[in-house]
Amino acid sequence: MSGHSKFANIKHKKEKNDAAKGKIFTIIGRELAVAVKEGGADPANNSKLRDVIAKAKANNMPNDTIDRGIKKAAGDANSVNYEYVSYEGYGPGGIAIIVDALTDNKNRTAANVRSAFTKGNGSIGTPGCVSYSFDKKGQIIIDKEECEMEADDLMMLALDAGAEDFSEEEDSFEILTDPDELGTVREALEKEGIAMVSAEVSMIPQNYVTVTDETVLKNLQRTLDLLDDDDDVQNVYTNLEE
Image 1 (cartoon, helix red, strand yellow):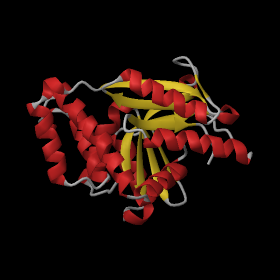
Image 2 (image 1 turned 90 degrees about the vertical axis):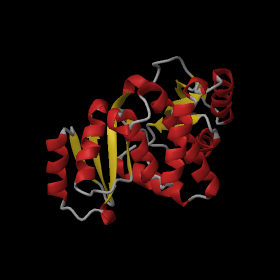
Image 3 (image 1 turned 45 degrees about the horizontal axis):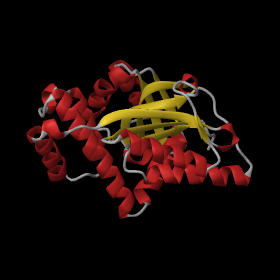
Image 4 (image 1 turned 120 degrees about the vertical axis):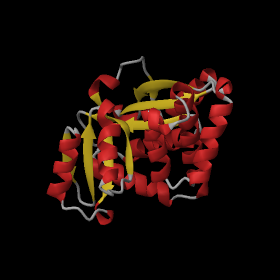
């Protein structure tokens, strides 16, 4: 989604009820556990863990909750059996959908994702059926109202730190990076006191599809809502033009 719609979606999710916040905390808690298992509990020596901690703070997760999650994962690393899985398919109207999940039961997750597609009159496809039309990028979103730096200065700061692209939307700035450079660019912004709404690896559509049919939009929203409610689902990407 474009920077503007990505920012709007983030605001919408943050304005939703406590259940939505609980879902976000569950997602981040699993990411913390996997990051600790893969690279250890010291953020100074684990760039992936630093990225997840930054994501946690951007979503207002309390510091003691973050610390507890790290300590629990460090002391119980052998019990962390989450694995990343990805699903691709088509929603109604031919909208491309990619679903990233982190699960301890792939059969359960696959069944839930398939059900979400089916209930929205869509269908799961084979791996690669839609991902070829997306680019994997590090994506940083900054709220204009929270940023005191001038747009040109912010752009130069980001590009000097290794960003690939910078764009200005109506109410936000979007910075794109190579996935491997996301942490470096984020840390450069942090050093300058730049508050970020989000900073994570994302799938960016190469082209967007406009849908005007209300029935198609209603079915698509049903699929997205079902996926959003599933604790195993980490992220959902589409090529829908907002």
